Image (cartoon, rainbow, N blue to C red; front, side):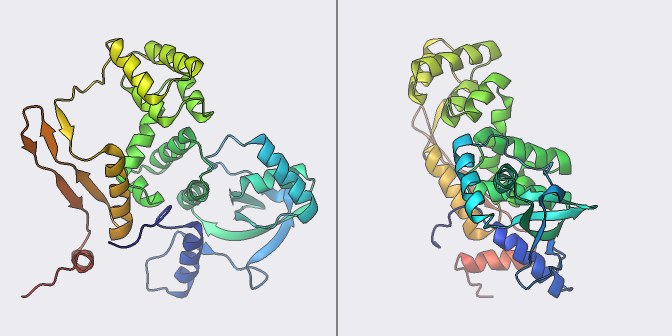
Length: 311
């Protein structure tokens, strides 16, 4: 198997480069992002900071005040070293990526900031904003879930399509979206890091929202580990909704990692249903599904798998 790929399948740089290629190759499918003409070879220009407006697609809402303060001091001395990514909307420049840099520049009272102007649809602007933050691990789990939900709602996308957009496995997107089923108070705890995603998953197995909230406060107050919270839930007679009469032959963490790596390796959606062992010792078969859209893509996948037809 190919080496492990860290992060997303399509990075921010690739998205922008894709736009450049789209301008040069009219015969290929038009890319959603293409670099707009810029006044210099580097594509960077300076614009009045007053003309840069916040993005309605910004998935991140929580900013570390200490880290932001350090960035402000750096900007005062060195200026904004990495250009903001924007698109033109009327007479303004709508921010796509670089929210922290913009806030720091505003706090440092800069008059002008460097930008790269691209042409981007609403969907692509949201996708880039998500990817830029996901690659830097800046989003907390709730912001990530809200970003996926916004992609779904705004552009009527399935979980499968959202996963393709951000280079994640569908199961990973689905699990993250489930966090939005939690009561607002618990979502706030997760966003602030008071509870982990593991705690949240345990709480999701509890039927009553009131019980969820009581348990969440108890977990924070007592500093419970995820395992400790699981034991409390079981002791209170609130097991997961689905009784487990079978045991998966693959650990959940490994299954998620394997799904993500195969998604990257084959560059298409991959679903793994692990084999299972029933309580009576019998085995249930697992399955591996790899999506393809046409015969050319099937040939590509067969080549990757080392299959050669003798026909």
